[in-house]
Image 1 (cartoon, rainbow, N blue to C red):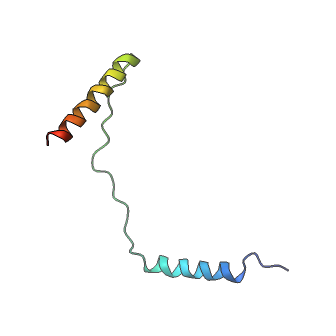
Image 2: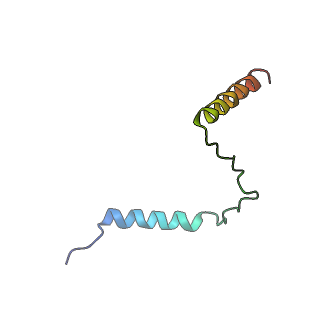
Image 3: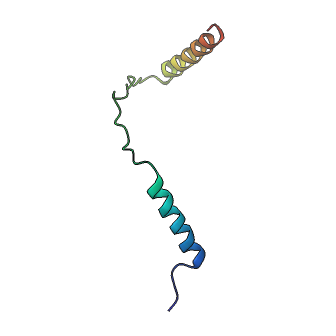
Length: 65
């Protein structure tokens, strides 16, 4: 009967087991605020214009801050 794992696989599994035991046990944080959803625009040109203005505003804020 053949083994499913070879010696190298078993060694890697053992290393992973030890690392997992040593890792700090921290629960994931719950998001504090729900994400803000922007209203959906029905006009694609209006949506593109808003994205362009938002991008230009971000660039100006970076440049002058």
